Length: 395
Length: 127
Image 1 (cartoon, helix red, strand yellow):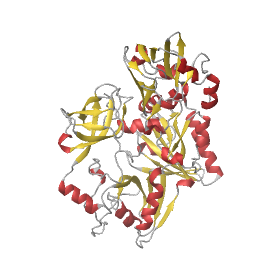
Image 2: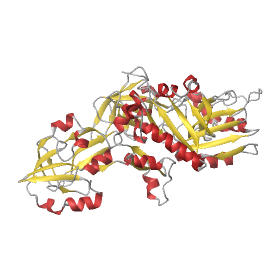
Image 3: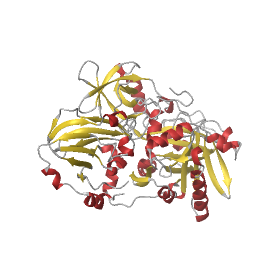
Image 4: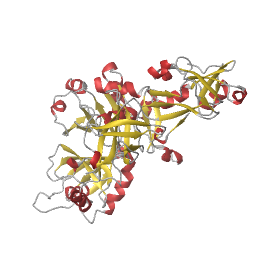
């Protein structure tokens, strides 16, 4: 038996001898029997027994993920907003304190350096969450394009932890302890002081379910003890709340049609082609009437003017075989290459083979029949609207 | 579940059990655990002739797709329809109900060179 490359998400990282980074919850994962893997240099839980069980647990009840490997940066000071306006594709100046926003950070060609969540804590104080794989790259980028702007930048990844608690029953569980958190709107957050530890709690997530993401300080032993105790208690809630690993995180986000860096977005893929228009503001101001242009804006304006050549679509395959990243999408009735798969799996919730991929715009209308080259044979498929799954509207 | 003593094991994580000229083949517990939940099994149909080292089927999980290889030449005489209908049998009972195919082979001699249980467990942890 041999597996394809996608079996080891960080095969390249594993080839180096650098010791793997561990999150503050590492020992808890091991105690819970997790299958640990190298994920972009971090020793992370892939699953605690079954990816499919964890997937259903989060769709039906609730579960929690350790996402402490994701990068977390603080920006504060006079030019913090102006700087973020410059590096992010989405408007920042009109965010209110307590609001979080999804954005891309682009390169000059309009490709995606990363996708990030920006939190506005105060007028001149922001938090950014980025992908683990892109943390070092973004730090370098931000230093290179700072151009004398006055603000304090700090990478707080290693002195904080982050946990995503997701599922339809999560808010009911939280309501027993807090009235404020369940009253938060989507993409809003609050800060809570627990035993002197300031936690940031946002109504956000990456699963398509309701829930929260919580950032904890872990800078001292007391903080780490409180965090581990809290997570151990979560793990002992039984049927209502179970730990889930990166495997389920991937299948959940795919059903919800959320982009994953390295798949739907890369340095060579622009956000307009990836259907992330909502996160691109081509008419930015700084709030004082002065126009602000972001890095990559020239390229994105050109792409918009010239029209897209290809775009991201959802696909459903006949049969139960999964389409995998890199497989060719074939034009109907021919052998012409019409696109490429970026992600795919047998959807645990829908029990159908679903995929995302880039396809010639002429074939991007829902209902268009295509074929997927699975290697030894082709499978028929059709373009479908995304998301595949929407909470509360189960197919 | 322990690794069975009546099987031989390949470097690519297939197990084989020999009964006369009939060779039953599946994937090991280690392989099933590495794959995670198996969602799809496709096997060469009965009557297919394969050479040693040829792919005899594919096993898919949520995460990945894997080829399964025949360690000896032969003809497929039976495939496990139950595992095609319910691929999770590969995870729940890899050495029993999760078997994949039966081959009739001209010579079982090449199987003598495969790992026995203690060699396989020494290499891949056992359980």
